[in-house]
Image (tube, rainbow, N blue to C red; front, side):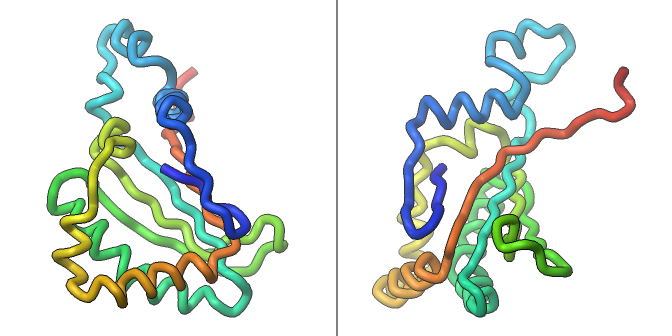
Length: 162
């Protein structure tokens, strides 16, 4: 997982990613296993919201490139059983610039381990996009028009629980 903000791509260390994942799941693996009657975190779907903020006037181009070059990869991962569901939303109205985002893509991963494993999408990319030169140029363009990108693991909150 990575965070992309203001034109720079910053990779998070694996330990920090696992800490984020476990925090989103409500604790450590050992604590989760110790809870009687609870599912293990490894068996529960893991939901991440991916936010994209494009430069003004480029949101349509961004989503066109996303649909063309990234969504087919996500659909392939659904077919492989790694991802359970992918949905996308955009705000109906505009927001202030500091809180603005153009698209939120929500991915329901099979589990947290799958979301953070060392899966190599290379073979999928070569299969789906035989013209790798065009694919790489378009993906470069998709990231050039982004102002910010952030990933937010989320968890359900039971409002009925006291």
